[in-house]
Figure 1: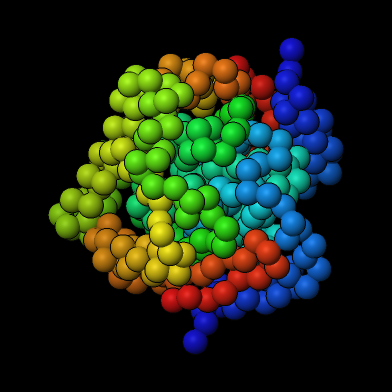
Figure 2: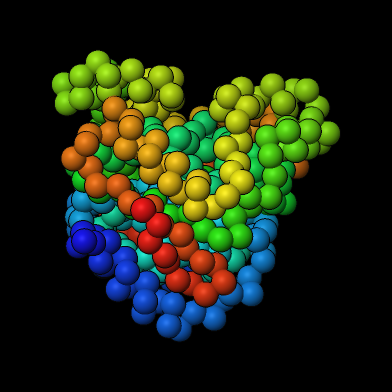
Length: 171
Length: 171
């Protein structure tokens, strides 16, 4: 029995597939770039950042963390030929609202020590940040310093404003 | 001087923001679910999976890896109230085309030992997989067994077909 969420996926996809004409697109992104942005529900990268189907890798995680995205970015650059990274964090991000201690306490409270033990899979670091533009700059710097990303890859940092849909160039 | 990619972002976003009317949406996803899918350029989750702005977290990484997404999923469930995970891998995925040894060799060839040393940040594991539906089942099982994801969270696994735009329920 499908959940309402699953039924929405099935029904919506049926409509999408009925007019789908992009089966010819190649695996490597046509425009050779990767977008890294947040998983936040209020962001639609294709629409807000102007990305037609097939043009770019789109990586999304909690906070648009560069560290968390490193595996995907190395695959994007080294195996699939992308040459530019656009990193976009956003206003009102959940990652500005808690610290590692808060999150760990919550997991322990809800799921016990067994739950907390699972967090070692990501070093127990939820990668929260205290100031938005500083976090953008630090993540761009992290990628620029990272020896697994070639110096030839262009990297820029941006903020998306969930209040008005605008992007702002930071670095 | 903006790169052509950056200029496209600026120009496209100007158009998007000019008709933007969704500044009122709340931080937690309205429909309380998270989609985990691949960064592949040929996937537009909002359109293909039927996700209006504000409804769901959308997590994307190379291969729609559950392990790689664990931090984001725990934040989604524990801090932002989502109660269902929809995991969708896809046909023609790049992760089916190489192994860890191939990828590591390529990084060493292009970026030297310094590049390879950076891979420890993700344990040197690019998380490739050999068979698509098996990988979907294994990732769903990984999440079901993970004690940092409550048993109450519904988890299902799907395949998106890049050739015809259709999703298929696997588990």
